[in-house]
Every structure is written in C-alpha cells, then in structure tokens.
Length: 427
Image 1 (cartoon, helix red, strand yellow):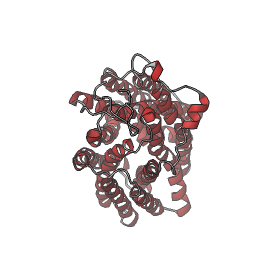
Image 2 (tube, helix red, strand yellow; image 1 turned 90 degrees about the vertical axis):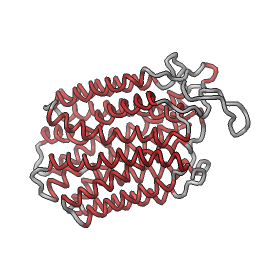
Image 3 (cartoon, helix red, strand yellow; image 1 turned 180 degrees about the vertical axis):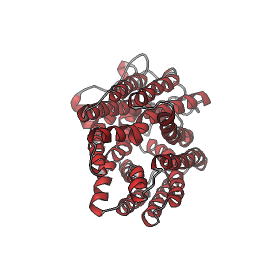
Image 4 (cartoon, helix red, strand yellow; image 1 turned 60 degrees about the horizontal axis):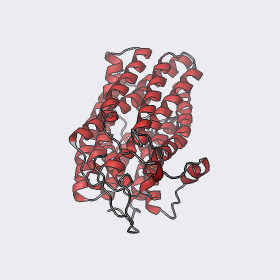
C-alpha cells in the first residue's frame, strides 16, 4: 500500500505496516481516482435526494398539501438514517478485520457500489410507495457500506500533513456532483427510470479507477478476533475516555443538522415562501453558486489548514459562516439574499467538510479500528441529512413558515462551532 511505514505507537512498540500512520505522500493519480469515486457517489446519492425521489413520492401521493409529501420523504429518509447508524460502524469494523488478498477496504467498496447501483436501477421501476421506500433504504445501505470503507482509506494511506487537501477531494465533488446530476436528469437523462439508471451507471464507471488502486492486505495473524459480541461492544466509544473524539463527533452532528435544515427544503422555500414560478431553475442557480464556493473553500482552505497545521480555527469559522447564512435567510427572505446565503453557506460548508474530516482522522482512539471509528463519524454526516427533511417539515408546519427552520439551522451550526472548540489534542 502506498504511503505506509512501520512507526512506533505511544507505548514504544512497533506497529505493523497495515496499522502504522502513513508518512509517504499519496500521488496525484491516487487523489484523482479518489475524487472521481466521490463524484460518482455524490451524484448517485444527492440527485435522488434533491429531485428524483421527492418528485417520485409526490407523483404517487398526489397530496393536497406539500407538507404531506415532505413528511413521507422524511419518514423514508429517517428509516434509511436509522439503518445507517448500524451500517456505517459495522462495515468499518468488518473491513478492519478483512483479510482478502484484494485488501481490507476494496472488497467492501466494490460490494457497496454494486448494492447501491442495483438498488437505484430497481428504484426507477417503482410505482408504489412501499417499493420506493424499500429500494431507497437498500440504496442507502449500499451508500453506507461503500463510503464507510472508502473514507477509511484516508487514515490508511494519507499522511496527516496532506489530509486537509485530500479530504477536499472528498467534499468538493459533493457540490459538483449535485449540480451535474441535476443538470443531467433535467436535460439529458429525463424521466424517472432513465434518471436513476444514469446515476447508477455513472457511479460504477467513476468508481473503477479507485478500485484499481492497491490496498494493504491484513494477514490472518494480525486480525482481531471476530465475534458479534466483540463487534457490538466496540461500537461504543466512551466520550469520557476519549473526549476529543466525543467533541468532534458532537460538532459534526450539530453542524450537519444545521446544514441540512438550511438546504434540504430549499426547493419548497422557493416555491411556497417566495412564490417563485421558476423554482426548479432557481434551485439549480443556487446550487451552482453553492457549488463554486464549496469547491474553492474545500480545496484552498483544506490545503491551507495542512500548511498551518491548524484544524479547530477553520472548523469554528466555517460553522459560524453557515450560521450567519441561515440568519440571512430567516430575516431577509428573497431570491437575491438566497444567492448571498448560498455563497456563504458553500464557503463555510466546503471548508468544514475538508478540515473537519482531517480533524476526525487525528482523534481516532486506535489505529487498528480506523474503519469502525470513522464509520461512527460518518453517522454524524449521513443521519442528519436523512432526518432533517422530516424534522424541518414539522417545524415549518408547526410555526407556519420557514423562518423558524432557518433560525434552528443557525443555532445548530453555531453550537457545532462551540463544540469543536473543546477539542484539546489537535490545534
């Protein structure tokens, strides 16, 4: 495996190469394949979330009020989120113990990709709400399996001084994938079935370059004993014993809830708060603005974080920027202000995604359980995105408008900034 050496742990004993902190910088080819993989993932995940799935659910329900459609979407996403809470760390724990000749992570990346793609194709054929829900839950499970293993390769192969920049290539494709996916399903691969199939095919094609990269092989004698009880017990990481891990996890939960509250109902905000007759087109415009700032901030500020050797200040400032963007939407609801907020939100969230991922890799309790521990961290990203639409719709319905939703977004984002300030072991 590229980038690993044998280094001493804190007790002075030598760690095997597969568990050692990597010191050799990864190549441009590795980064390109990594970024390509994430582009495919985000297109396959976020294009359905942003457009295909809500429209499919709405077409089946034909509700009298839009909140009913959002609640149905939120319930389906919420169930998928609950499954993700187990799928992420379980996949990570199993990949930590995988002794395949293809490596620890690659078999799970391949399996997750296949499950994700097949479920998306099946989703395109569904005409009943139960089938839609089942296929999306299976697709989300594939997403969890795939990304749990892929994220672990950062800790496995990327040295600490390069992780901010490399993590930027995990986050920048999120914005690009969203806008590219929306444009493709609106202009090229139109229609429910073709939209889902195109996302599945692109996922597989863009994943292939990374699957061809080498992965370190775990020897059978290096593997921890595999038992259901042991794996389940390992899913609990004491915040008292590992406080920096706990504060980083809490910060990630709060900031991602804040971001999801501010973005998941944006189409409905345009349609029903602003009475925008061109809501779908303006959603793409806002997403494009958001994308530009996410890409620039994740790559530029991620690399700057590496050079300065600082993480917390970047995470604090990025979380605060997202809170301010939400306040703009709450108190000055208009399309021009939404454009300003989209840029500010993209600036903050892009920086957060890259630098917080690098921070997370530096507070892991045990090098032998990187996959499982990062799987737990991944829960804090995915579950808020899955649950927020339902909670957001309930908030809008109870308060009779979107102002309360955006205020809640601001509170969560700033609380996340305060939580990360409590981390002690990383600057």
